[in-house]
Length: 286
Image (cartoon, rainbow, N blue to C red; front, side):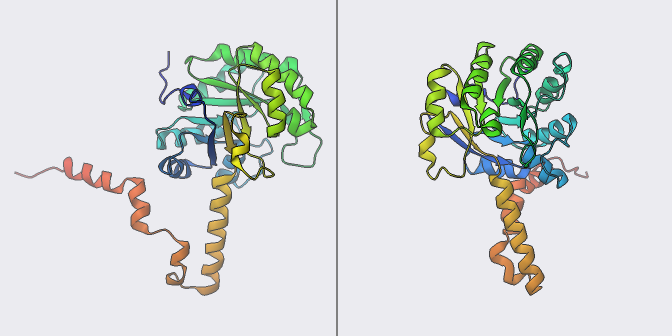
């Protein structure tokens, strides 16, 4: 049996308070989030496609792309990491490859979705059948070598179709399988009140919606709220603005307010630790 590399995710979600986390796009952003005090790290296909390949999140990434990227994140932090496993990548009989790849990457949980294509675009939005989704989730649960590794069941019925009733039907079926974490994307706080009453006993993960002005609106309704693009958008704007200023002024000193101090930056990466190890193991001539 594989031993969990990080604390159990459910232990954090048992604290009777809503956890808010920013989405990370790589190992450095995850470490910065951890240093800022966040108790979890999340890395999704949206941020991985953008940061790793400069691509849109339209299903172009492979299982290896996502699991390798997730491993760089888990290696960089000591908090549990949740990763995006898209639709599971394989038919149920082969989905064990997905589960083992992410277990080996050290993540604490993955989410598997029922979206059949068109995410983040104006193309027709479709879902796979509930029957097919149930079989994928059954196979995923059976494939786990680590019982603490969580399978988060995601439905995009609200986001893709605007159908709360269908989302509830699917979430109820996921819960009946023994899934402990469900992920109704697009759900508002008002919708979650209904979902909570119709699908009791599950912990709910949601995406922070731009129309929600106060994070307190999620309290008591969602167990985990993810702002999936936060670090990616912050980095993109910061680098873009700094490059524009550099191109305009051609003078680094004028950009100091846009750049982090190199000493502070290197300290976060462990240069001091490396120096101490080098001195400790330095060969001494007689």
